[in-house]
Image 1 (spheres, rainbow, N blue to C red):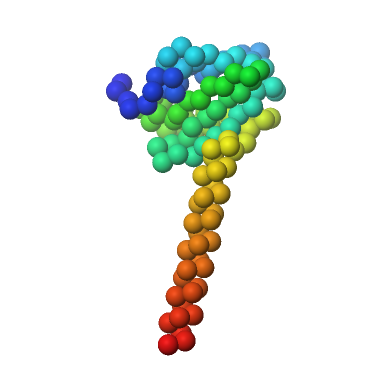
Image 2: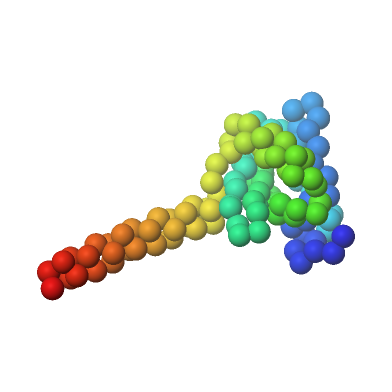
Amino acid sequence: MENLYPQKMVLDEFIIKDGVLTVTTMKGNILSAPISEVEVGYTDTQDGMAYTFKYGGKKLTFIEVPELLSDEEWERLKKIVKSFPNYGLSSMGAIGKAFRIVGVILLVISTAILLVIKCSS
């Protein structure tokens, strides 16, 4: 498999056993933590989802690389991750969402201004 992502962000293993999550990247970075205590953030990127796991001061991120798993496997993994008690939008995801909202608001305002100018002439 040839991919354009850094090895530290490519998923190698995703294991849940006895309430403990262990995530390993292709570079060998490992995060192991009780599911109830791990913070999970996500960012919706143009290439797919990026998931960030935080526990005990350690942080590990992996990207949804399409060639790595089938669509059904990615959907199953997403469903599992979304069920974690501390799942939510990551700070980068929140920033991206805020920029998209501001962009839509600016588009609506500029369209309204153009309509007012067009109607008044």
